[in-house]
Image (cartoon, rainbow, N blue to C red; front, side):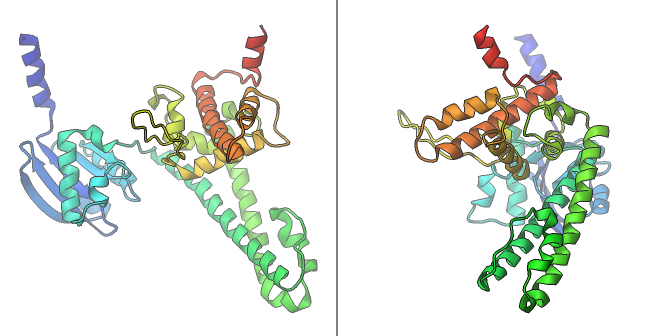
Length: 361
């Protein structure tokens, strides 16, 4: 009994004296300070700038601060940790008490965050922000994705305009549209479409430069991507996006947890003996999830290499049923993420038919 009392007293000493909830706004944030007895000590607005946050929280002593994940949360969390505070970044998908409230405003949201952090920080499902270096390198991939999306919209607009006048869009790759399509445009549409073709060609050149940068980053700065690219169908773009998004592979106890982290796990709504089949959660990083689904489509496609993953996906498709192929693609994407994390942590050489050889032996 004495040992138990000593532990309780020591935990009370380590517990923060103040809990601070911050509802982050684009220009003005709202701060709510709670005491250890859940009494509101102070409420105030605060400009959402590094200078204002540093001036407000410097010299306070260690406090437990809680913020919601958002556009400003990466730099705010790093700044508060630098000042010596305990920082909890709440997962916005889990704080339904805030965004489904009938009385929602910044002051009430800051109070709710502080009270949840006082009761049990685990209720907020805290997330892990990547490092500054990883975030800056990931911005290169996101910039490329924006340009690819813009180029696709331009090409689709050109295709639709040509069809409206009875012309067919020739089958060419997106990177060569600007060069090969110029001669196919009729004279009546050159005024409208030639400037768009020039933009398509310029975007293709910039995207190509981004691709070279991505390959260079993977080879020189992130050697773990070379382990992941052993899997046929996984290129430098997906490998680097996976490494930068996960950032620290050892924060997952099991490789299987990566599938849930990326939103590739089916949702559950079991009740008694009723276990309906639901869609995936779509939590986590949507950009990486889209890349993994593209890799899964290649693995199950005509050019896919024979492997355990490909055979497992075809076994799922053979069961039939509605949307069997789509379900198999998502399942292969989830299993691919698990395999990529396992190769990253173990550093082993990828054997595409390891399970087949084991069963044969």
